[in-house]
Amino acid sequence: SSLTAYLQQERMADKSKMNFKVDIPKLTSDNYGEWEPLMRLVLEIHGLWEVTRDGAQLEDVPKLEDPNEQNVEADPEEQKREWHSKDQRARLYIMMQLTTEVVSQLEDWEKATAASLWKALIPSDLEEEAMRQATAIEETRWADFSNMTAFLEDMQKRKNLLYLNPHGRKLMDERRFCLTILKRLPTEYSTAK
Image 1 (cartoon, rainbow, N blue to C red):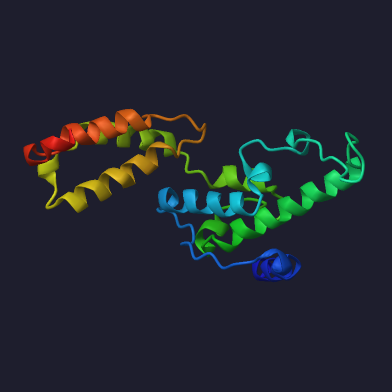
Image 2 (cartoon, helix red, strand yellow):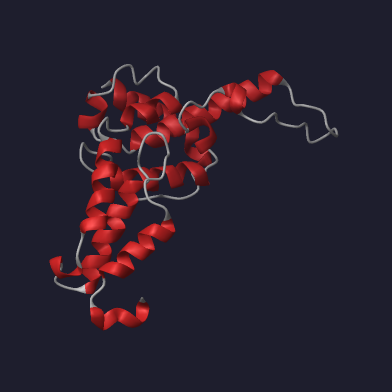
């Protein structure tokens, strides 16, 4: 298939830059909340988030400076090549972590930039889901769980979803989240409050 050929070609071109293997789950139709922070971290580690973040364009990247001369900007053509190289690597990393089901739902993925690809992967109902999670956190009670570990794991999963809205707007800050958890603890944990 064209996807397989594309990925093989990109992997070969990028092989020298891949220093370690990252084992994250492939994106499916229902695991964006788990996939997104891990994939973003991979892109950040490899210096590729700047070309992937929402709305990223070549003009947004700070001008590179020529290391041989003080305060002289690097060649604009070199910057353009660097940008496109990073964009291709970011697209490769993203495409390698998508299931065929997700790829089949993408339009013109071959022509997409890393930023447009990233944006296309954000579920349309994500912000609505984040609002539901904020409400659920506020309403969650310790008694609904069998043990403390289950309670805290559920709270962490819900917290992660709060930061996954397409506009990057936090729906609940860290302090409010921590206070909410402390208020929900049973009385035997009152010294933590």
